[in-house]
Structures are given as C-alpha cells and as structure tokens.
Amino acid sequence: MILEELKLTNFRNYGSAAIRWSPGVNMIRGDNAQGKTNLLEAIAFLSTFVSFRKSAAAELIKKDRDFFLIRSAFTAASSPRTLNVAYSAETRYKIRLDGEEKRRAAPLVGILNTVVFSPDDLMLMKGRPDDRRRFLDGEIVQTAPSSQVIFHRYQKALRQRNAVLKGGFSRAAAELLNAYDLQLAENGAMILIRRKEILERLQPLVRLAHRRITGGSEELRLTYEGGLESFFEKKHPFESWRDGFLERLKAARETDFQRGFTSFGPHRDDIRFFINDDDIRRFGSQGQQRTASLALKIGELELMKGQRGEYPILLLDDVLSELDESRREALISVINGKVQTFVTDTGSEKIFQDAVEYRVKSGEIRPL
Ligand SMILES: Nc1ncnc2c1ncn2[C@@H]1O[C@H](COP(=O)(O)OP(=O)(O)OP(=O)(O)O)[C@@H](O)[C@H]1O
Ligand SMILES: [Mg+2]
Image (cartoon, rainbow, N blue to C red):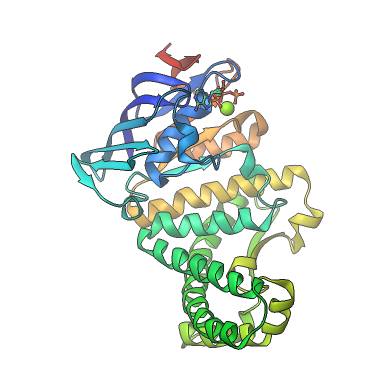
C-alpha cells in the first residue's frame, strides 16, 4: 500500500499543506513541537478514524478553526484510490472514498492500512492491561473491520450492566441483569474467539521476528490471560465461552452489586509476554522489552501482509533513536524496499540510505 499524496487543511498546527510522498522511506525532520507527529497522526487517522495519541477528533482541529480536512491519494492492490475525511463539531465526520460520500466510518477502517510504532509501544509490555487489550483489538478491527460492531455491543452491554449494578440490588435490577448478562456473554464469546484467532496468527510471526533480532538466543511467547480459558471447548468455542461466561456472571453477581461494576470478562483480560519462560513484565530488561515490542510490530506488519497481500504503511514516530544498531538493522531489513515508511527524527543522522527527506517547521512542510 502506497500513500501518494496527502493534503491537510486546519489539521493540528497545519493551516494548509500538500505533499507528494516517496513509495520508499520518507524521513520527516524538524525540531520539537513543529508538527512531525501531527503528520503521522493525520496518516493514521485515515486508517482508523481515531488519533493514535488518543486525542478526541475535536482536538485535531486547528485552534480557532471549526473543521479539519484530510485528503489523500493512495494505491492499494495496484489500484489508485482517494480517501477524504473531514470533521467538525457540527457535522461530525464526512468521509469520501473514491469520490463517493460514505455515511459511516466503521466499515472503512483499514481501507488504508497502517502500523504505528511509537514510544508508547516500547512500554506496552510493562504498561497497563488496557493498552495491551487495545493493541490486540486494534489488530482484529484493522484485519476484520466488521468485527467492530461486536466490541461496540459488548461495551454498550457493559455500560448498561454497570449502571444497574450501581443502582443497587432489587428484583427489577436482577431482571435487567439477566438480559445484559446474555448480551455480554454472547458478544464476549465472540471477542474471545477473535482474540484467540488473531493471537494464534500473530504468535509465529512475532516469534520469527524475535528470533531474527536476537540471533535465536531468546524465545518470545505470548499468552492470553483470561478467566474463561477453562470453559473453552475446541468443538464449540462460541457456546462453551458464552455459557461459561454466563455462569461466571451469575456467580459474581453478589460481588458485582457490592462493587458496583462488572468484575469479570474480556474487558479485564490481559496478554502476557514471556522470554525463555520468564515474564517480561516482571523480569525483562529494558532492552528485552524493546526487542519484544519491535518483534511485535514486525509481526503486525507481516500479519497484515498475509491478510491483505501487501504491506501496510509503516509510521515510525521517534523510535529509531531508541533502538540500537542491531535492532535498527532488523527493522531496516524488513522495510528494505518493501514497506512504505514514514519516519520522524529531530536529528540529522542518515539511517536510511535512499530516504526522501522533508523538513517540518511551524506546521509547514517542504522536501529537502
Ligand atoms: N489543534 C491544534 N491547533 C494548533 N496547534 C496544535 C494543535 N494541536 C497541537 N498543536 C501544536 O502542534 C505542535 C506539536 O506538534 P507535534 O506533536 O507534531 O510535534 P513534533 O514535531 O512531533 O515534536 P517532537 O519532536 O517534540 O515530538 C505543538 O506546538 C502544538 O501546540
Ligand atoms: Mg513528535
């Protein structure tokens, strides 16, 4: 997948910008706070319709303006395509794909495929479980956009169930919970099936990448840490998880009423990373964490390549300076002429031989 052209209007600190990109490595240089990450954020936004910095869409509108517009021309599966996204508080999202107005963003997630690698990812292993869940669920949604609805339904049922729990116990509340428990269990079972699936596909790719970076001296393993594993039956994954989850929800009801929230389910699960059977979260050095997160990103690239038949666009925000020589080389050997890459850098070091360079200053960008 190749992003050919990007035009920004009122996006973050960009008033108006238009850039044609190289299909290889695009090196975006500039001092701090000039707009480098903002550019990557705009590209990633075309892919997921949310900010990878977790900002609300309204925060992406340039100060004192009332809308932003991102326009793009890209090549996917050898066909030229265009994708434009506008947002304003009043009209919300306006999206045009190949010139045609689209009513909903959800089915368009992953039309433009991106993988972001930022300093936050370097902390994924030791960070919070919700970041790890978001990582996994993000993979699911980008490879199968239609699964988004399952997550929405689950979150909705969870909010409703929690609201009932907060209201305290009554017969009416118990009746309501029966309905929400079922919705939670059905959608939860589907989430678990998809998480298991994606982890099984990701696992060998990540291990391979990790073996390459470490020269085979270390073995990385990912495991899913959920409370419903014991219910899983290979022959009937959906039914076994749904019924197991229902059983646990009923059993936890009293405690949940006391606590005022749903204490159990896929929204509390986690992923763990092991190196040679040691949990990285507890025993991993900073270097091991970095290697593991790099392997994870390379695995992600390969996963999407396998799924879509072509590599996604890779966005590297401020991570190169965090990687030592051997890790950089591992990354470069994957990118090498195959993956269109956008790299931000505050320095002037020449890391990629054939990179096309750009300079960003106060929300303006020009080729060097
Ligand atoms: N909605 C907005 N309107 C105008 N300016 C904004 C908006 N949001 C962020 N900015 C500005 O964008 C700048 C930050 O841009 P960005 O995060 O892209 O910097 P950067 O070049 O990546 O810097 P660093 O090297 O520190 O990461 C800040 O000056 C900030 O004030
Ligand atoms: Mg930045």
